[in-house]
Length: 185
Image 1 (cartoon, one colour):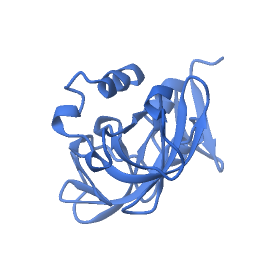
Image 2 (cartoon, helix red, strand yellow):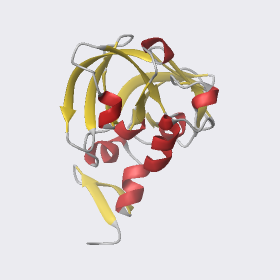
Image 3 (spheres, helix red, strand yellow):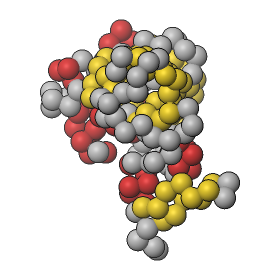
Image 4 (tube, helix red, strand yellow):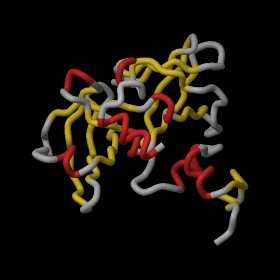
């Protein structure tokens, strides 16, 4: 296995890096789509005044472009968490569940924008859930990626905001979700 991988799509070299860097820090939206199973979540949004807006989601983007700009936010399924209740996160409805033994893949449709978001959770977290159930989803702001309309990665860092995570649960509380996020991050 090579130490570095070159990702070429459509005859264009999009990124050369280690497999881990390509997964964690893709330089282009096509690279993000190319690697990872289940696929990365991609949601249409826009950024204005340093704030990313996507349905009920509000995130702060450092070094944001000026004006109102369409963007795509991306987050890997292992950084999408179930909220304690539907009202504690982004309202969604489970479309289907895939039980894979050591993990469960949830396919959830966001109420606000109708897009599907995939979450990778532990079997204990999905216990008792079924297709059609209403849930709340939380995203890890620090693991959210932002891409410009041309597919290039925006240099700004997603610093926080209302991603269905309160400041108490954004990686500082020591609860089970935070421990799971640390394990994956």
